[in-house]
Amino acid sequence: MLLPILKYGALELKTVSRPVDSFDSELEKLAKNMIETMYSAPGIGLAAAQVGINIRLATIDLSVGEDPEQLIVICNPEIALIEGEQKSEEGCLSIPEFTDTVIRPRAVKVRGQDLHGEPFEVEGQGLLARCFSHEIDHLNGVLFIDHLSVLKRNLIRNKIKKLAKAGEW
Ligand code: ZN
Picture 1 (tube, rainbow, N blue to C red):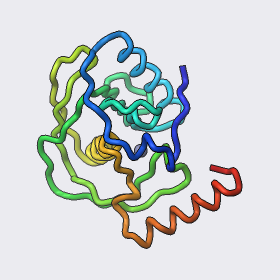
Picture 2: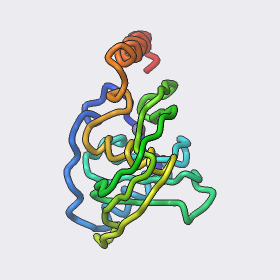
Picture 3: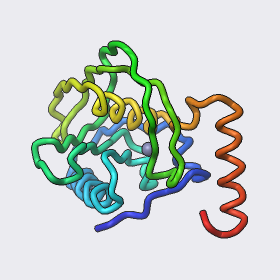
């Protein structure tokens, strides 16, 4: 089932999500719907907060459904290690049509749990490291534009305000 993706301005996107503590069929169903929604968008990552559920769950797939081995579903992810720095253009399904340069770690090691509560560790470089950082930010109520300068952030905010006024957001 496709879930509506919340856009900038929604309270859930500014909320710190609570840890996943029941690894039940409800969680599995939400993850399945998030994956479907992410592929349909299309996007390479989605946090539960973006579909209005403030729990620490994220789905990531750099192949957007092309390669089943690249799908990562992670609960309660935490960055255990960061290495280096990368500067690149970034966007977000909740802030469509806007992108900007964001500095992120070049590589990360992330610890989390699968849908059954089993702990696992995953390492990511380049785009995957960027994606992990972006999705974990979502779980903490942080958006990519929060990393921009005040000037750039206000520019985007004002454009969104105008779009919202015109009923186009
Ligand atoms: Zn995002």
